[in-house]
Image (cartoon, rainbow, N blue to C red):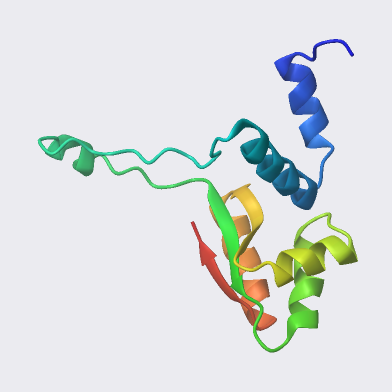
Length: 126
């Protein structure tokens, strides 16, 4: 098998569903004994200027915390917001807390949050 370039790998990842990508990350972590979690930025104790430079966030993750009592309605909303099939959407809802949308703009994230909450879910924006 020929060695794949970084661009080839990215293109291959774009074809995966969120569930398949999540499974890949878990397997990658196991095989290479690493954690793919984002590093936590630690602010220097003597840097008050950094705290003053707060930018308004323009990219949000819509996180489903809990499905609530109307699980079927929540699954329907997850399908409407994503390109997931029924089984994949059910897996996202069953696996709560889980990310429904990543990197959405503020308007889209708030709209998704509202529609999921209307269906009975508990949702947070990160």
